[in-house]
Length: 484
Ligand code: ADP
Ligand code: G6P
Image 1 (spheres, rainbow, N blue to C red):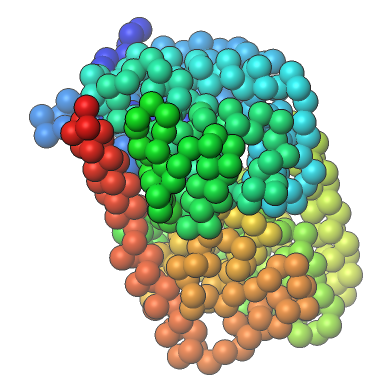
Image 2 (tube, rainbow, N blue to C red):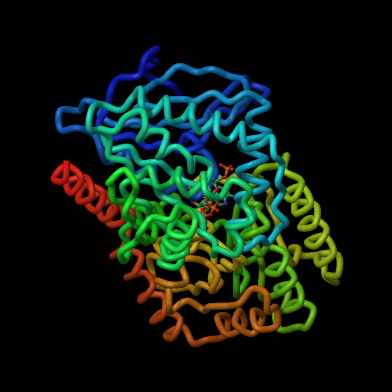
C-alpha cells in the first residue's frame, strides 16, 4: 500500500497522533499486507484527515501511529492524501505498554473496572518511554505553530512531553473512552503524572460532560491548580479547557454506501441466505468484555427458549472482530462466547439455520453496511462504552427509515439517541422485554423513533465534531498568544 515512501517525513501543519495508524500491517501466507485497523477511533478520525488536503493538492497533514506489528521499522509514506508516520514498538513494548499498561490496566479501570485492572510496576517506565517516542515523532513532523491532536488513553503523557519540546504547537487531546470518577481513577499508582500529562494540552476533549467534570475535579485535587468552570489555571500561566465533544461518523458516507446497488443486493442476499426471517436481529462489535456480549447472547437465547422468539421467524447474527488476543481477559471472553453460542444452538430442535449465527472475524465495510441494511433490530448493549459508533453507523445506514436500535444506557451515544429502545444490559429480563417491544411495536412507531435518531446523527456528524473541537482549540491558542 505505501505509495510514496519518504525517509524523513515532511513538515505539516496538522498532525494526528494515535496509538494505531489507520492501516494495520498483517503477515499472511502471501506475505505482508495492509488492512484497515480495528475500532471506532480509526473509523471516526480517518475522514477528518482525508478532508484536509491543501487547495494546491500538497499534503499538509500526517498521522503518527503504530502499524500493528512488533519489531518492525517502516519509513514514512503518503497514502489517502496524508502522510503516514509509523512508530516502531519492540515486542517487549507491545507487551508492557500496549497489552499491559494500556489494555490490562487503563482500559478496564476507565470502563468501570468491569474486569479487574492489573497493575505491574515495570509497565509504567515502558508507558513513559513509548509516550516519549510518539511525542518525538510528532515533534519531528509538526511545522512551526502546527496543530497536533493527540488521541486516546494509550498516549496520555504525550501532551505534556510535546509541550516541553515544542511550546509553539497548538495541542489538543481527545479521550475516546470514558473518563472515570475520582474513586476509580485514584487507584492508579501514577495518577498525578497522568493528569499532568493531559494538562499539557490546550484543550482536553471527552465524549460526555460527566467525563470532563470527573477530570476537572481530579485536576484540582491532584495538582492543586484552580479551575473556573471548564477552565484550568496552570502553574506556567497557561489555561487549559476540558469539555465534552461527542464523537460521530461520516453519516453521508455510510448512507451512500447503504443505498448503493451492490450493498442493497447484498443485504437481500444475506436475508435470503438466512431463509428470509421475519425478524433479523444483529450485533456487530469488537470482541471486548465491555460490549455486553455475554448478557446479550443470554437474553436472545432465553427469548428463543421461552418461545417469545420463534426459530422459524427470527434469526440472530452476531459478528465479532477479534481484539487484543494476547490479553488474558480477552481469551476468556472468546472461549465463553463460543461456549455460550454452542450451548444455545445445541438446544435447537429443527435442522434449519442455527438460532445464533456467530462469526468471529473482521468484515469489510461494505459487508458490515449490508448487514446493517438487512437487520430489523440492531442490538448495541455495552456494559460501558465511551460513545459506540456501531449504533450511529446502523442509523445512518437505514436509508428507508425502517428498523430499530436497542441501545444500552451505558453507551455515550445514549445521551444523544434518546429515542432508541434503551436498556440496562445488567438487567437481562428488562433487556428481553425491551427487545420484544422493539420487535412488536407497530412499524409507524419504529419509523418515528428511527427518524428522530437519524436526524441527530446527520446533524451532528464527524465534520461537525471536528469543526467544534478545532475551533475551540484555535480559541484557546489565540488567548494564549494574547497573554504572551
Ligand atoms: P470500539 O471503538 O470500542 O471498537 P465502536 O462501536 O465505537 O467501538 O467502533 C467499532 C468500529 O469497528 C465501527 O466502525 C465498526 O463498524 C467496526 N467493527 C466492529 N466490528 C467489526 C467487525 N466484525 N468487522 C469489521 N469492522 C467492525
Ligand atoms: C477503541 C479504542 C481505540 C483502539 C480501538 C481498537 O476504539 O478507543 O484507541 O484503537 O478500540 O483497539 P486496538 O487495541 O486494537 O487498537
